[in-house]
Length: 406
Ligand code: PLP
Image 1 (cartoon, rainbow, N blue to C red):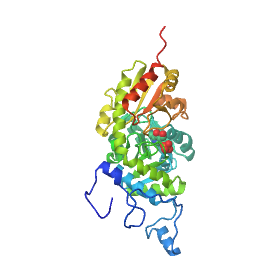
Image 2: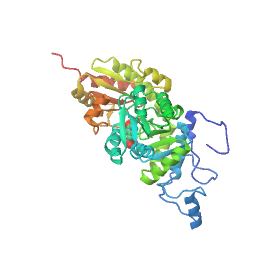
Image 3: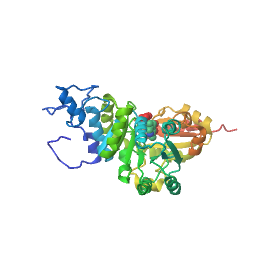
Image 4: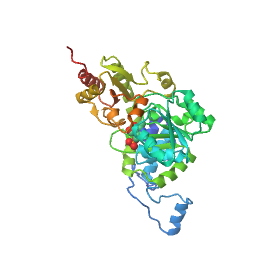
């Protein structure tokens, strides 16, 4: 925002998406750039060693080294904090780098993390394959079951990690409910808000300590960058900043610039993608070759009532199960034309993926089964194409999955 003019103390969400944190990293001058400048420098020079020591010690504001902080990245972080309603945000080189740093900062030697059963496959691999080597145990449970949550908390835990809606089954966790139980027990809640985005829900308002995103997805929105973000209070982010500095995983300024550009259209993209996903979900529910549609906007979804309470819309992601299992899933994907086959989501292009062979390929089959991820499951990310073209495309691909009539 221009510091000289204050036309509203707290601009509305869409205005923050365009202007939040856009103070120029260049010195104030007449005619400052309207587009955020990219400060493509790994390090910063000083006029004297004393000045450098002052900046290093925090006695004077400034930049030292881009693994610590960078003016372009800093401006985007301010916008992200304004969108999620936190004091500060930190950008990371990827969503998983943000998740790793967050879990690291909250883990204790010999501690135990409680996590949802249904999560992004890379997060499950991190939790099941790497963190145990550091002495961090993980209990993955059904977070929709309050009794199970309380039981696990009573058994001692250092944090709760959850996604809602979850990847890939779009399950809904009662965010405020889990945050309440965790607060009573004095443990923090970390929410991966990638699927919902701050347009649809703000977990910090529920009492979560930290909100994370794969900014690679909706926040960037154009399938052209890889970044992650964490948002929280000053104290939480200060702790995490130390971890980012020490583990690495800092963000690149050009990717940060792309993210800033994507964020300006985040609200209109997400609202339109949510409308399209709702239409696709309703269409799929009436298709005979589809046995189940997972979309929280459908009245048939078990988390529909909770989603209505805690979200401002149901999002652009859905998944569905084909009666014909693995063969039908492969045939369906081969039949797509407008919808692209890819493993990411949240971009302007509609994308379909098969979790068992892509995002959840690395997850142990038993763990996949326990989460309810079947061979016939297809995950769909609604893009910005004309919804009628998407409906035609899906219908024609579904026809290929029909068993041949005798
Ligand atoms: N969280 C969710 C819900 C995801 O779907 C993904 C990636 O697909 C990640 C985190 C990891 O993000 P990234 O690929 O940016 O590391």
